[in-house]
Length: 106
Image (cartoon, rainbow, N blue to C red; front, side, top):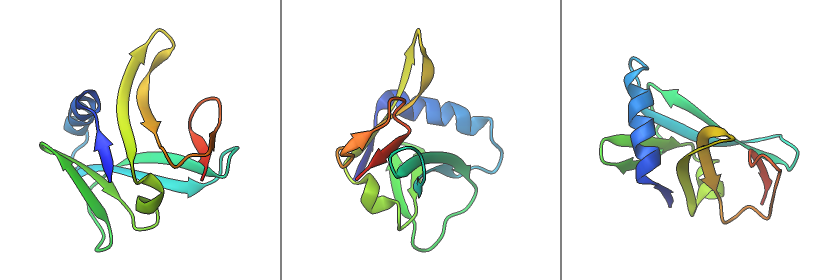
Protein backbone atom coordinates (compact mmCIF):
# COMPACT_ATOMS: atom_id res chain seq x y z
CA UNK A 1 0.00 0.00 0.00
CA UNK A 2 2.43 2.75 1.18
CA UNK A 3 6.16 2.35 1.79
CA UNK A 4 8.51 4.27 4.05
CA UNK A 5 12.23 4.37 3.35
CA UNK A 6 14.62 3.66 6.20
CA UNK A 7 15.76 7.32 6.10
CA UNK A 8 12.15 8.52 6.52
CA UNK A 9 11.57 5.94 9.24
CA UNK A 10 14.52 7.30 11.23
CA UNK A 11 13.41 10.92 10.83
CA UNK A 12 9.81 10.12 11.82
CA UNK A 13 11.10 8.29 14.91
CA UNK A 14 13.32 11.27 15.80
CA UNK A 15 10.48 13.79 15.40
CA UNK A 16 8.01 11.63 17.34
CA UNK A 17 10.31 11.72 20.36
CA UNK A 18 9.87 15.50 20.43
CA UNK A 19 6.05 15.25 20.39
CA UNK A 20 4.38 14.06 23.59
CA UNK A 21 1.46 11.60 23.33
CA UNK A 22 2.14 10.86 19.66
CA UNK A 23 1.23 7.42 18.35
CA UNK A 24 2.21 8.01 14.72
CA UNK A 25 2.44 10.23 11.69
CA UNK A 26 -0.79 10.92 9.81
CA UNK A 27 -0.32 11.31 6.05
CA UNK A 28 -3.31 12.69 4.19
CA UNK A 29 -4.54 14.16 0.95
CA UNK A 30 -6.87 17.14 0.81
CA UNK A 31 -8.33 19.23 -1.96
CA UNK A 32 -6.28 22.28 -2.90
CA UNK A 33 -2.93 23.25 -4.25
CA UNK A 34 -2.25 24.21 -7.84
CA UNK A 35 -3.07 20.70 -9.19
CA UNK A 36 -6.20 19.69 -7.27
CA UNK A 37 -4.85 17.63 -4.37
CA UNK A 38 -2.38 18.54 -1.68
CA UNK A 39 -0.36 16.32 0.66
CA UNK A 40 -0.34 16.88 4.39
CA UNK A 41 1.34 15.36 7.43
CA UNK A 42 0.74 15.77 11.14
CA UNK A 43 1.51 13.87 14.31
CA UNK A 44 -1.46 12.01 15.70
CA UNK A 45 -2.40 11.05 19.24
CA UNK A 46 -5.38 8.82 18.32
CA UNK A 47 -6.81 6.80 15.47
CA UNK A 48 -10.30 6.49 14.01
CA UNK A 49 -12.00 3.16 13.30
CA UNK A 50 -11.69 3.54 9.54
CA UNK A 51 -8.01 4.57 9.54
CA UNK A 52 -5.37 2.47 7.78
CA UNK A 53 -2.21 1.78 9.76
CA UNK A 54 1.19 1.05 8.20
CA UNK A 55 3.95 -0.04 10.58
CA UNK A 56 7.67 -0.13 9.90
CA UNK A 57 9.52 -1.17 13.01
CA UNK A 58 8.18 1.00 15.82
CA UNK A 59 7.10 3.78 13.41
CA UNK A 60 3.40 4.05 12.58
CA UNK A 61 1.94 5.89 9.61
CA UNK A 62 -1.80 6.52 9.69
CA UNK A 63 -4.08 7.31 6.72
CA UNK A 64 -7.77 8.16 6.73
CA UNK A 65 -10.18 6.17 4.55
CA UNK A 66 -10.45 8.90 1.89
CA UNK A 67 -6.68 9.47 1.57
CA UNK A 68 -5.58 5.82 1.55
CA UNK A 69 -6.76 5.04 -2.03
CA UNK A 70 -4.99 8.16 -3.35
CA UNK A 71 -1.77 7.11 -1.58
CA UNK A 72 -1.67 3.49 -2.79
CA UNK A 73 1.83 2.68 -4.05
CA UNK A 74 3.30 5.88 -2.61
CA UNK A 75 6.83 6.01 -1.18
CA UNK A 76 7.73 8.43 1.60
CA UNK A 77 11.40 9.36 1.83
CA UNK A 78 13.38 11.96 3.76
CA UNK A 79 15.85 13.96 1.70
CA UNK A 80 18.65 16.27 2.81
CA UNK A 81 20.27 18.44 0.17
CA UNK A 82 21.79 21.87 -0.38
CA UNK A 83 18.31 23.13 -1.27
CA UNK A 84 16.93 22.02 2.09
CA UNK A 85 15.60 18.96 3.80
CA UNK A 86 12.19 17.40 4.17
CA UNK A 87 9.92 14.52 3.36
CA UNK A 88 9.60 13.62 -0.31
CA UNK A 89 6.48 11.87 -1.54
CA UNK A 90 6.66 9.76 -4.69
CA UNK A 91 3.13 8.88 -5.77
CA UNK A 92 2.76 6.70 -8.89
CA UNK A 93 -0.90 7.75 -9.17
CA UNK A 94 0.01 11.42 -9.64
CA UNK A 95 -0.55 12.31 -13.30
CA UNK A 96 0.86 15.81 -12.86
CA UNK A 97 2.61 17.53 -9.97
CA UNK A 98 3.54 21.10 -9.18
CA UNK A 99 7.15 22.25 -9.19
CA UNK A 100 7.55 21.91 -5.43
CA UNK A 101 5.90 18.47 -5.31
CA UNK A 102 3.31 19.38 -2.68
CA UNK A 103 0.26 19.11 -4.95
CA UNK A 104 -0.83 16.68 -7.67
CA UNK A 105 -3.68 15.57 -9.88
CA UNK A 106 -4.83 11.98 -10.11
